[in-house]
Image (cartoon, rainbow, N blue to C red; front, side, top):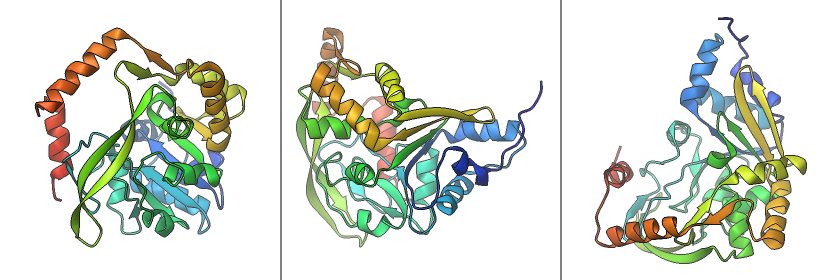
Length: 290
């Protein structure tokens, strides 16, 4: 079997059209990316990937890496210094670095590097997807989403920012009370809001992809054999907003009674504080103090 030619990680940002001064949300499946890189004979690590993008965007750029903990429920704890992310290996590597700042929202935080890191880490937004959230910053700064070895369905969380601003009827507000420990070690109860999906709803972005591509908001490519997508978030925002307003979100949202019954059953179990094996593992990961 022929081997794909090695492409140094330092060259990856230019291949996804990232350069000086850019604002970038970076996501990657590191397991598959590392396997593909090794197969082509290239060295690869998550730190090397972060360093490559920081070098590409320079001191005037900003790099954001999702470090989400979206399974939090009211009454749970969050320590911005120690709570682990559910967003994969790249998030864990980002949070372990000395040059990182973490944005404060417990449900949807970001590891941030570069020009706006201190600004974003200093915000205090009660809603994950509001205008004053990192998602709003990404739009205002004409940021791009770069997803390596990940499909749009796993990467385009930004769609929920548009849904919140448009107040779509298939989502609703939920209040959460979180025992929050800040960067100085001070712990107190804080209230947050989540614009969560209603029972029975389901998001599938497959139908949205050709619309984004047609508008020039989404482009695809490959680095050797590794696929990537690049999304212009300001342009994508307009596509999603028009779909919501003109078509009631039908391109990416659906409802079934089967899901409605399943969601209600899950809700009842949660109220009884019943934890599935997955929830127990997630809860242990969140509360582990490393």
